[in-house]
Length: 269
Image (cartoon, rainbow, N blue to C red; front, side, top):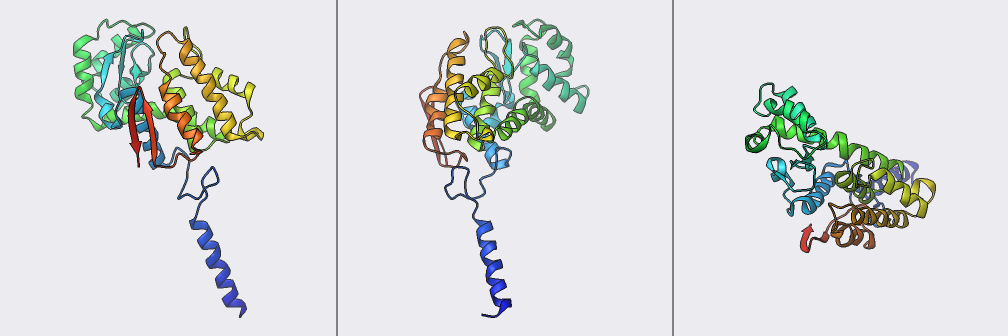
């Protein structure tokens, strides 16, 4: 075989290898990617929505708002932003920066005043109606997206990558951020404590540990946190969803995915 022909064959072989990307768990896959891949991020949002809203249609949740009686005031939007936690205020402030004079901007002083409480003072029905109407404005939806990424998605995915975790681990971290936040608060256990407790039981891949063993330890820590918190008790988003994906070895969060939350069955792919 002539050198030129041999070189062409080598280049062709390399090209074919590059087109088949192995998944995180070693099984053949397409473009596995992390959770910041748009397709994976959409899957993550559907998974969160199944637990938070009993629906895979997460984009329908921009208009959602109600007081769910958890001591955090109003809960609304795609991430369950809370008037008592302050992230709902951040969303409305972002919206006001993008669209000065929008109907929600008038409630910024009231949102600042109720931060840290479950009070509806200065909000009430006029506020919830304005929130639902604002969901039709792309600028308001963009404000929710930006606050989701700043507070929950970006830091969770970044930490998961530092710990050597694939897409499933990145989602597990993200969902913990969404439900519990980063740090401990009164009556709650935050993500930071869960991660520390998991590392007491298993090493993450970045330290040479087994990914499945570490994620199992993290999920154990999270289940304990849920059962300890007075406003939560159901652990199905872990036991019949995330734990199922882990047992199946879907470390790259590849579809099809089948799971249950609160007894309801869901499927993607």
